[in-house]
Length: 330
Ligand code: NDP
Image (tube, rainbow, N blue to C red):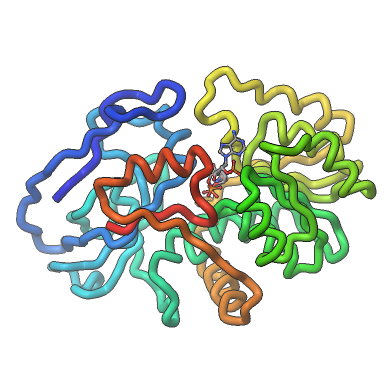
């Protein structure tokens, strides 16, 4: 068995040596336990953010889809797959009630994916998909005909949130960081307008493509991009403050530059945590699965092969190397 240990607190962008890949010897399983083997592991922005509160010397946090390969627990039979917040490890012994603070997700058997790839359980049919679903529908309550802006639009949550807004009949503007991403959003996912924030001046382009101003903003990035979007919103616009990745690797980031506009535009910005919706995850799963089956929801993944490449998959994602959901195939 292999596991990544959180060796040194991140200082700015994560560096080689912050995590250490080690071999671990696992004991035989006891009654009530099962042994699972990672099949797909997730790399997500929250790992960078939550790291601030993690104890050094412990396995690094993360969610995976694992296959049960040995079991002394009838609720978790051999051959079935589970979602587990087991961290960055190849093998895990669990009793099904895994202590995974600060995330507190229970270990769950995978529902029927109806032939779709199991890796989607880390993306459109999992936590990021549920984030897009509740963060857009519940928090922003978009209505047909409204203009919706999504930042981080080509990522796991963003491409999904933008497509739900399209399904609901909104006009959708996506902001992302490469021409390939922009082209995909426009040509394949049907976003109405797109902005590459690395090559275009968002402050100039956004008012040109949204002269009627913006009703809803699904914010994945925070910082300067969000300050510009907020300035272009309608009075009483709705904002889902999903994340602020632009500040995760920069301890000097000035999140406060957005505060003035929030006041003058009387915006309601609502933070939320997908984990608070845990009881309603099956609802999101069913709906997202249905939309995929109906061809209304497309998905894409950037798959890195090999458990030993987890760290580079993680830092690539933080640099924007992924299109759609970044996952690692063990
Ligand atoms: P993504 O798949 O979107 O991957 C991260 C992306 O962030 C990169 O691909 C990159 O795309 C973009 N990015 C990196 N640095 C910057 C920057 N400085 N400015 C703007 N964009 C940047 O990740 P997720 O979809 O998993 O997560 C998206 C957001 O949602 C994150 O902020 C995350 O923390 C948040 N989140 C919140 C949850 C909640 O419960 N509230 C649950 C899950 C996620 P690009 O090339 O476009 O720069």
